[in-house]
Length: 111
Length: 111
Image 1 (cartoon, each protein chain N blue to C red):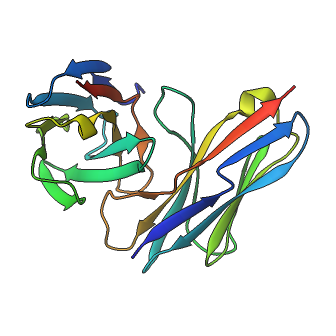
Image 2 (cartoon, rainbow over the protein chains, first blue to last red):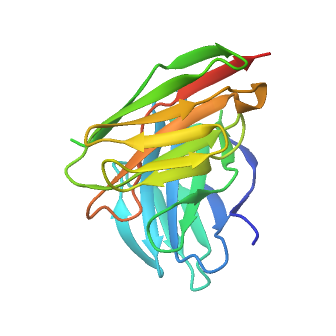
């Protein structure tokens, strides 16, 4: 099976802009989770979607949002970008809300 | 508050020198404990999942164990290709899709 894919792999934006990241889960996986990874904070949970519904959300401001489509593909959006949003954004998919398999991530740099 | 602490932060070993990585956790109810390996610029790669105290899992030179308060990742006769950051994460009961990660242990194995 193909693994989790994320696009784009690298992104450079300026403060105040918005960005949309995409994630395609492993075929048959219905749960998709998003994480932010920074050197200082490590991996932090953003939100999780299952069958197009957000089931869980981490402690991030409302500028961070996401959605899931009927084919389980997911997108996350960050509006009004800040310098501190520079990070590696990781998507993980799971078949039954247990073991999560991660994609390669999207490296976002905010200038 | 649920949290995960990993030690040491960094570990340097000579090839063949066995050692252990520690993951201490506090969680209201443990649904599962996960070990991942992360190489620079890549997403975490799943290694093991443990569900109950006393459980052990092995894969090549790696062995993971679990008690009620901590988990150990034992590395036997490591090779340079084992160099990576090892991440420990827990999932709490009732917490869909949310893994709480430790900051990781960066392992370097010198030939």
